Length: 475
Image 1 (tube, one colour):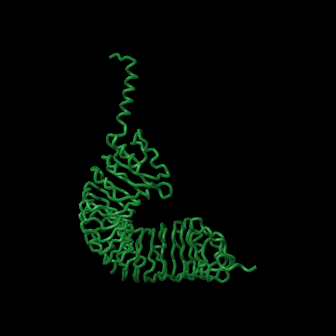
Image 2: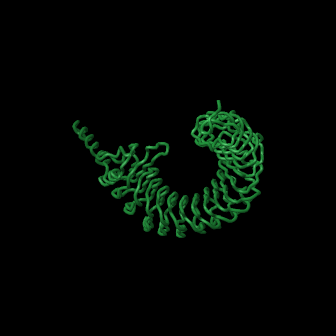
Image 3: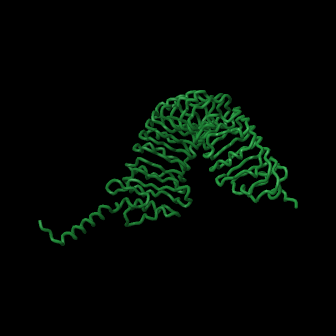
């Protein structure tokens, strides 16, 4: 077949027009997205600068199109390291025009205000809601159970108040329910036990009270359970023992839980993090904790636990806090000393009586935080502190440390230093001026205090310190 040369430009023009037409932003999607943008009053980083009428909305920042060039997800996120990456304003109800949405991800935008966005009830395909770290307020709607298509609901870090609606038990398709860091009150609805597909349940940092429901036999796939920083009382429910095969994170800290730590926690062989801090637990730590070979973070601080502390068989602990119980450890445990990856060690008031010069940890490079306050530790920490490169905080008040402070190398990362109530002598190095907090009170320091922002309480009780904020030095 012979084709005229004029046919090819015509064909090319037709293809180009077809491509532009087929890729054009759907009128409803554009209207809904631009309505959302109009509800934003402040966008200092230009997060929505690409959202312009008449342009292809599938190319706009944070917009995803997967089916027939229809918008299926909006993902806008602020970044903590970029202070201007936030949005101020409200969520426009006209966003409901974007009918093919299956995911809304408004995370760390910080200044999005208003009530729970009711437009969500008009989006039949919506499966994933992550509206996190904003300033939404009011109550979570009592009819939230109508959103039966949801697979994930996260409202973490807002200002929601009132009770958790009982209808939430109807969201049986949820794999993630995250309502932490709000102002929720009352008890946990027992109906949550119907959410048998949950892998992640987070209700931490609220004002929930009563006992923790004994309903965990339903959650055969649960890997993360976060209930810390509430007002829960009573004992750890026995049905939590059924989570042992898969649970990796168990956080119950800062409540009013009491009784003994249950022996069954030693059977959680997949456990990575266990936080029971800030409760009213008594008695000994179960010997079965020796079975927690995979645990990386263990926090039992601020309870009333007593000796003996069991020997742990961990391959490497990253974070350990046993502070402020009634332990008499005498030494830093060998299983801690041999850890190759530890970055946080907190053993304040643990009955440690040792010379720090005799401590030979396998690794010091990774330490970020060390708290050895309120013990009977002697010797010098200089060798330790001078070997760390990323140390952020060192607390050792109320010991018997004896060394020349002038020999201490203060690394750039160090922000917090408390050496009060020891036997330290010498002069204060000028490098303390870069710290965020400092306490050198009640030692044997002498000389002129370098220019700092710290109050007199950081320097009182020494032999012969002078200069601001203490009395002027004599000529």
